[in-house]
Structures are given as structure tokens and as C-alpha cells.
Image (cartoon, rainbow, N blue to C red; front, top):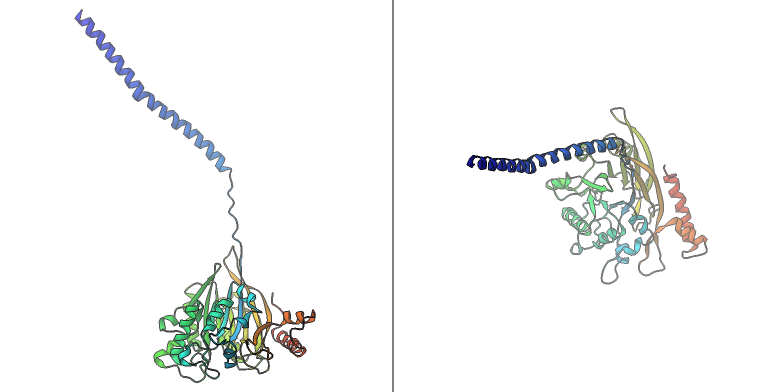
Length: 406
């Protein structure tokens, strides 16, 4: 009887163990396998569906920007006396008629043909310029982004004047190229990224009006020499810019056409990586042209040069020194190839107007065509003689510059 009871108990325990094993081990494993099989089937279905999906990557669009360029920014004593209100100097009124053209551009460039050595040095006129530094702030408000400081007046207030000028431009927030406070600064190429287009800026001048650049400050002014230009261009190309733009202070004053040396230097620049040349020094306009250059490897590229932009702002009265242009250069970066090319080139004719009927704020950089149209509409805000002058200057500008370039 005792054996029967023990056998019965053993059977019950074995049954319990079997049930426990099935519920807590075999059944969960079976569920996992079924889920894995179901997941595999689902993934297979999804993969089949995904194989039929074509993902289209949108093409990268072209990038277009406008570079606006102005000529020589000078300041004779008649100008800074006119801009003084008894307390401060303020030149902003000079730019009111054309400000929108400059400020609306993606990047705006000019040539600063004076120095900012400070009031303690004493503000001065030709032949050694020292201009009220408030002009730097007014130029920034106008929309100027980059100034070339390499020209024959760079040393007008000596090396200290170069340092002071660059310091004032830094304070105003205007980038600069062509003069330097150290060798390191001279060899640091100005690069501006404009909406994804990287532009390298350099500037060179033929001389400094006979004022010597001391050997210990040899880095302070970028003087034109073939070897030095090539060295600087090599440094620029190491930065892999999309374009290289160079301001050249060259040529002969008051000549309306470039000379053979300007053409030689232009060819040197173009064949060594430069895309755009902006000329200055003659104080009058000289021609512009878009050229196709053949490089050493046989490839070709389009380049642009304007040999002289004339005066943007000055107190000069010599013939043709009061007319100029705001030059607009379209730059296009191809979305597929990332190649950047020069597009349309146009210009706005301008004139440095002086209203002698006013006692103050006489100067105005005037939009010539807008003024002529306004006069023709019956608004005789200028004299008939000034109207005739504007017509004559417009003809001169178009004769020199030619048609817009597509």
C-alpha cells in the first residue's frame, strides 16, 4: 500500500514538472519562433515594396550673386568742410541718390584713395590726404563691404597712417586688402563667402607718390611686381576660391584708354588664375571688356577687366573726372559642376554733382539717367546748364564703356 501511494505521488510530481516545463519554456520559445517567422515574412514584403520605390534627389540649383563696384573714393578739403555741421563730420548725404544700388548688391567693392590718420594728425587735402574717419562709417552704411587700400596715396600719412586707416576700417566693419600691419596680414588673403561663392580679393599699386616704404615695413603696401603678384596669387589659390578678384592701381592719370603695360599686366593676371580685374588711378573712366583666355593646359575661361572706374567721390573738377559708373557684375555658380562664371555686366552712369546754390551739403553722387528723366518730366530741380552737362557726361560714359555685356 505504501508503494502504491509513493508511485501515485511520483506520477503527480512528474506531471507538474512537465506542465511547468511546457508553460514556462517550450511555449515561450514557440511563440518567439512564430514571431520571428512572421517578422521575416513582413520584412520580406516590405523589402519587395521598397525595391519598387525610386528616391529622386533634387538637382542643386545655380547660385547667382551681384557684385557692385565703385571707383576712387577721394576726399578733398572742399568735401570735408562741406560735411562738417559744426559738431561732427557726416558724409551720408553725398550718397542718398544712389545708396539703394550699393546696399542691395550681394557684395560691394571700392577703392579708398585717402587715409584715416585721425584728427590729431590734422585733416588734409591733396597732395597728402587725411580724411575725417567718420567717412568709414558712412561708407559702411552705404553698403560697402570691401575696400582696396593699395594706391599712390597709401603712404600719405606714413606707416602710422596705414595702421590707423586699417584700424578705423575694422571698427566700421569694412574688409580691406592691399595694405597691411604685419607680414602675416599681407600673406593672409582676404576671402569672402558670398552666398556660397568664395571670392579671393587682392590689390596692388604701382607706387606711393615717391614716399618711401621703409624696409622694416616692406609688407605695408602691395607694390606691383610680377614676382610678388605671382607669389600672392599662389597663396590665394591654395585657399581654393571660386573666383579671384584683383584691384590694380595702374595706368596714366586722365587718359581715357589703357596703355600697353596695363594690358600686359592684365594678361599676366588672367593666365595665372585671376577672373576679375578692377582698375583705378587714372581718375577717369577707361574701357571694360570680357575676354576668353586660353590657359597653359589648353582650356579656356572667361575673364573680365575694367581698366579704370574713374572717380566715385572727389572734389576734382578736371574734365571727365566727375563722371563714373556703378558697375554691376553677375556671378553664377553652376549647381551641377560647382563651376563659377561671370554672367551679365551692366552699369549705372553717375555724376559728382556740386550744388553751388547751397551753403552746406552741396555734393551729391547723382544717378544721371534718373536726373535726366526727372527733368524731362517737368521737374526742373536742376538748372538747364546742369541738365546739358548731364547729357554730355552720359554720352561720354557710354562712348567709353560701350554696351552692357551678356
